[in-house]
Amino acid sequence: MKDVQWQKNLYENYGLPDNYTDSSFLEQLRKNIKPNNVTIIEAISLGASISTRLSVVVLFVMVFIWLNNEWTTPNVIVISGSMLTILGYFTYNMKVPDRSVKPTKDLWTVLIFLTFGYILSPILKTLTETISTDTIYAMTIFMFLTHLIFSKYGSSHILSDSLSITSSIFGSLMLASRLASPLHAFSLLTVSVQCFVLLPYLLSQINNQIIISTVLTIGTIYLLLHVSQIFSYVFIIAVIFIHFICPLWYIRCQKYKDNIYGPWDEAVIAS
Image (cartoon, rainbow, N blue to C red; front, top):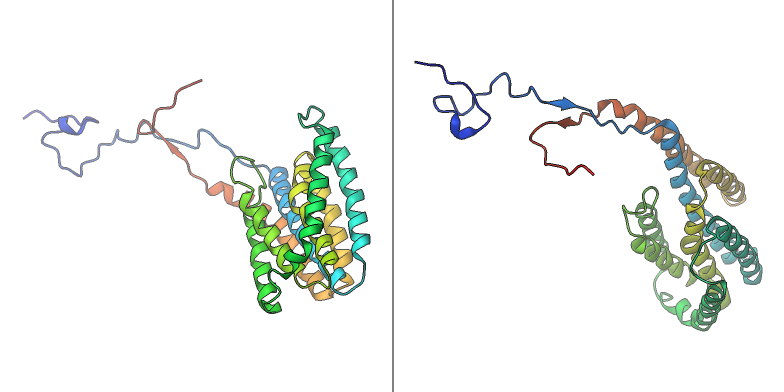
């Protein structure tokens, strides 16, 4: 009887066991033919962008602590934030000179926000006033963790900023209800919009994330030392872990990547 030669078509393999595998089955198997390994600089830059967002959240909480302890006034916070926003606005326009939005429209948007924000501050302050402070702080931590998890760190097509921005604003609103007056709440919510809505647009136009992260980290540590040394040490450990240990760990684990390619893959139209 003539030996049956194995074929890749199942219906042609008469006389062969169902579990038969020919030695030529994996002849066209290819491994890692399209390597896309991340360099150490790219990994550290991504870690820097994450630690930057963490520093911004901690700095915002520091503003709340200063307002809550009456270490500063709402007027100082609003004026300082406005000056930094104007500086950031001109920097952003220099980075993106071909913006379609006119400055007059931006100014109109700012005036609308300030007007309605100031009018609604007494209402916003009392929205969560009846909830216990411990619950407020627990929910705030959860909201800011959600903000950090769903923020855009790499490609702008991966995630939507909607959940990230909404959670950060909601967390800010809960903290604002613990402050002394509607003016305090208005100043904190203004800083919230500046930190979590406007600042990411500016940071996305700056290429060197490592320098930005370093500056923000140093400033955050300096302010944290005036509040709590324990939290300062925790923050330093978190930054070192995010900024250096995780990227190095990721680079080391890349050698375990094993992508296989063969004729069983879906057809891809060559452009």
